[in-house]
Amino acid sequence: MIQINNLWKSFDGNQVLRGINLNIIQGETMVIIGQSGCGKSVLLKHIIGLLKPDHGSINVFNEEITKLSDKNLYKIQKRFGMLFQSAALFDSLTIAENVGFFLYEHSDLNNDEIMKIVNKNLHMVGLHNIESLYPASLSGGMKKRVALARAISTNPDVILYDEPTTGIDPIMAAIINNLIIRMQKELKVTSIAVTHDMTSAYKIADRIAMLYQGKIIEIGTPEEIKQTQNETVKQFILGNAEGPIYSKFEDNI
Ligand SMILES: Nc1ncnc2c1ncn2[C@@H]1O[C@H](COP(=O)(O)OP(=O)(O)OP(=O)(O)O)[C@@H](O)[C@H]1O
Ligand SMILES: [Mg+2]
Image (cartoon, rainbow, N blue to C red; front, top):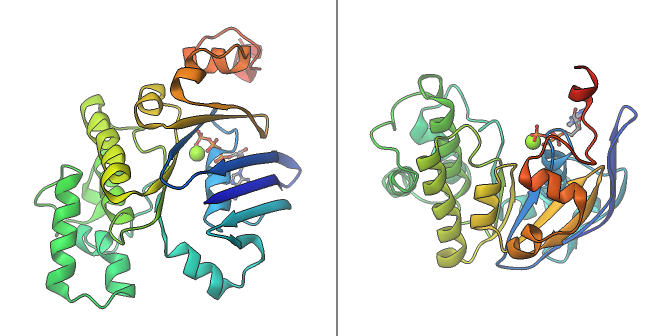
């Protein structure tokens, strides 16, 4: 469904992606793990066409998206749901208007029909009676759940989740994990989730890929990743302070 070949990206001399190769199979949940700042969000933004690569190809639904006009790219983007790391809600819109945003803009549904979907999706993420509030009055975790309710509002074919459980308490994180699994099982969506929460990764992933120094250094099922022989992957998944991963922080203490 999605094929990424030899993807390179730098920002002002900061070489972030250095030849990413990754295939996502229809219906699977792929989890991308890696250290803070390694380029996980940058990779997701390439998959949805928000960033253009310096080099390489990204094939989505049999279209080479790096070469599409804005209009044709938009047709592809409409089939995606995206949960941004920062939630990215519209501050001047109510919660209901945020969740229903894409439906108000791009569907023929009337207000009552949209409000039904809005209520159902907010209920799914465990939020009630907040439809008329504004994002400023919500906690960080609540904002993330509203953004998730918005991401699933258009019944997308692919959902990209950027840190879906970060900043959320463990019980709500478990609910979000279950929701991601349910979306896959019931609606057959293909999902790509970026996280450094290994509990969540093991729970939701069909396959896990680790991004390190701009490349995918290992990919496998959760069981395969748990039994990895790669010392870098091992250090990351076990959260060990010592190992091959270079830590700038430790150099300073
Ligand atoms: N638009 C941009 N302009 C310039 N540099 C950028 C831009 N977006 C990302 N970067 C840089 O790319 C690198 C990777 O950033 P990215 O946000 O992908 O990290 P990440 O793996 O998602 O980290 P985290 O786990 O903290 O969210 C960082 O060094 C960041 O400063
Ligand atoms: Mg990120």
